Amino acid sequence: MASVIYVRVPDSLKQGLKKYAEKHEMTQKAALVSLLGRGLAVHQLAPASPAPARDVDTTTAALLEADERGRCACAHVFKAVARRARQPLANCKRCRHLLSGADFFTAGSCPNCGLQITGLLTPTRGGLDSNEYIAFIGALGALVSMAIDVTDETAKSP
Image 1 (tube, rainbow, N blue to C red):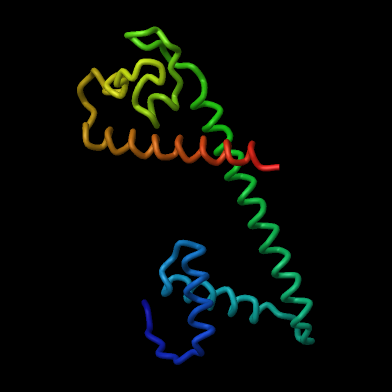
Image 2 (cartoon, helix red, strand yellow):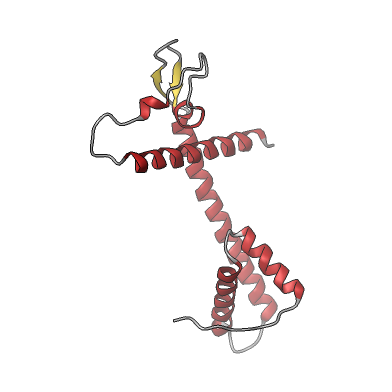
């Protein structure tokens, strides 16, 4: 069950909430509920003797560490996807150029002669819903493209 709370807040707090929501790809409502819930949880678990600065520093350090672990895990997944996407899968039917997963899922054509190769991904057996299959291939293509872009940018940065 949900309840409504009407509260006026300073503009700076509203702007901070908006930035937090955008950074975490949330609605402002979801961001407010998340932050309020976490704040209440920290307050309820705080020791009897007040040491707010130490608690904030400890909590901030723990959140930064968790964020870094998440970034490392995400980077690891992207590197693995990009590595797989760069592996050779087949030869072009027209020019025999070696094609990679990236050619299939991002470009959709042979980089050497331009032959459209996405048709090779279409299932030949029945039983698959073509709309769901096309949506899956599109999502996979977006993931492969992002993974390659991210790993290429990482390789170029000092």
